[in-house]
Amino acid sequence: MNSLFPDIAVVSRNRYTEELCGDHVELQKGDNRTILVMADGLGSGVKANILSTMTAKMLSTMLAGGMALEEAIGCMLETLPVCGTRNIAYSTFTIAAMDKDDYLTIIEYDNPPFLFLRDGRPHHVERVTKTVHNRQLIRSRFQVQEDDVVLFYSDGVLYAGTEMQLNQDWTGPDIAEFMQYMYFPDYSARTLVNILMDRVLELYGEKPYDDSTVCGIKFRKRAVLNLMIGPPHDPEEDAGVVKEFLQRDGYHIVCGGTTADIVASHLGRSIVCEPAAAESEIPPVCHLEGVDLVTEGVITVSYVLRNIRETFAGQDIEERLRKNDAAARLSRYLLDATDIFIFAGSAVNPAHQGQGSQFSFSYKMRQLEELAELLRRLGKDVVLHYC
View 1 (cartoon, rainbow, N blue to C red):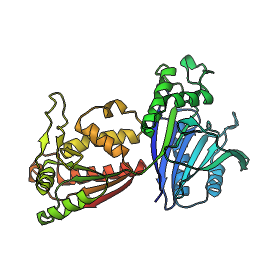
View 2 (tube, helix red, strand yellow):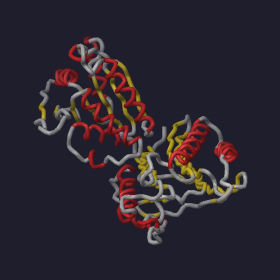
View 3 (cartoon, helix red, strand yellow):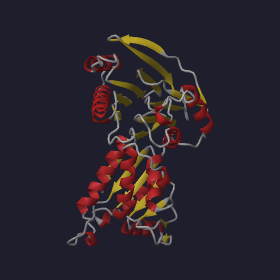
């Protein structure tokens, strides 16, 4: 396990009037390294989306499977055609490979140069040009430290301006200066990429004339979160499961009324609920001494799933996450965590089994499985433990 965790965030915006984004980002974990690939397909729309998706998926799969960087890139470059008219690749790409020893290798092919921040300031990294299959690649390799930030972006982020005019006041150095000014040590990767994208959209007048994607990696200490949702299948196991849950290091969150009652009984303490917001469909937050957050179960988790899905899709949900409701709070905990252990109670709730109920036992299990998979695809280490 790495001593530092790569906190990864991605935000994308389609070209104005396009339904699909011509950029695509893939994240995969292998046995010895984490692979992040951002590809930018030529043009926009469906064709660009297909090209970038194919490029990112092929590269990330080969590299996560253990193939050497040079070999995987060589295979990709042999596969990628070159536009005969413009003599440029049908898809450009940036690869970030994070090794177990906290070394980061970045390979760039025709994408804008990445930005590396250390202590909030642009930091020089040696960049070596290498020719592979008659294509010029730029390679960088360096050891990262806690709170280091790497940002890379597609060319739609550069020269952002209105009326399809290249904005010469928004170049790579201008972006570096802007991010240095906006940087704050407590900001997560998610916050940093959204700050940059918000500025890009502002420069475009909210109508980007090119697909724009920002990827961010912030290297941080690991943050453990323990989530208990649903009572154990066998009531006789309640005490043992709660004890194991509470003894684990990290934050502790309980979802579900019955589950919260079991934990409260074990602790010998009372649950106090906040007043329900009249305009909100999300059940209220409750408080239990010894636990960091208590929420309702399946309804709240359904809203959390929406937040995680949209985060995974590269959408900006920062305004929603700043709210104080149960779904926003639980989403923030999950997105800020690096290692997540989910105690998935498999007891059947009779109240959810009646005819017409949308919250069946299988629905709850599907919720948890999708949540765990999305969090893994966001780069987090997730254990789904059925009890």
